[in-house]
Length: 79
Image (cartoon, rainbow, N blue to C red; front, side):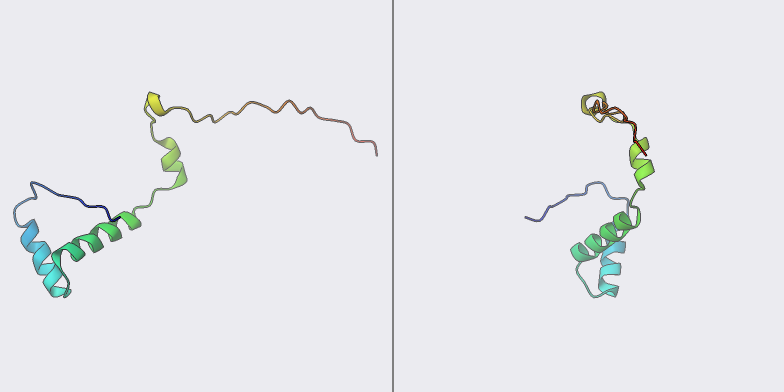
């Protein structure tokens, strides 16, 4: 199922500019808005470093960067 979004309180002239851009690209306003949102969001894919640097709310802080050791010791190898 496709997701939907309703955007309220657009700055003055935004809807008219979207309508003009859609007409210029020979598409609907809805399709033009989809293309704009998709292109911007795909261009801003975060790096793994920036994702790891984000603060996690305490209720979701169950990620362990230092997992417990497996209890396997080292052994000597006879050569």
